Image 1: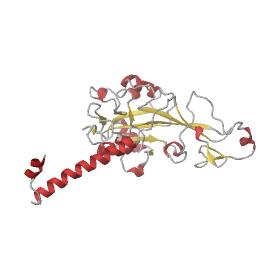
Image 2: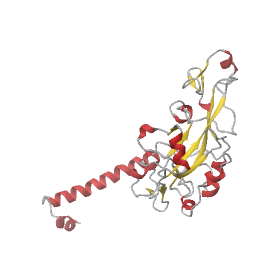
Image 3: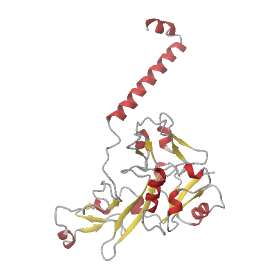
Length: 289
């Protein structure tokens, strides 16, 4: 058993039903998401369009978040689901930095790491994840990717699928049918989105009409890429749905934690080594204490 996802971009309509169902099913607090829809505006009017990409944890076969977690709060189930244990988590945020997909967040209520866990409480009793059930277009397919007779395996075998950041060597189990380069490649637009859906419109130095009249509007990342204005990709053209501000996860406490942990572990190893080589007497250590 090896659970995975297929996102069929031919069917996705960007309705956010999956995001809403995920929040409802897992009581996800405001300001964080376990699954979300990335929007990218492409082309120039009248040949403009919008690309959708459902984004979440990739349930990697080689998950860096599991490897880096110092307390095994991130772990892989026998069925391939990468899960987390809130009770074991110490909130060090190392997993957030290790994940190349920005899929992990710190729960603002429990102050522990959380992410998509494939609705493990549902799969344990034979149900599909909430996002799969609620999708009106059946664009999200779940199942055992190791089973050659399963629908998800047939879709992977019979279609040209893509994964996010294959160079990371994480072996993700989330596959996209007709995945678009402008949504899969995070380097096309590197700036953090300044606006979100349902928020105020972004303005470039006030009035933007002159940009479109001066011929400085271009397209980045090829003919189907997002709009580029004045030599810089218009970062407001990449949007995620409704969000709120939150603090950066990586700061000096994380570096301090890893440094002090390394010093403590190194001291212990040195002590054992000197005793094993007969260079010191462990009894004298306790005598001085």
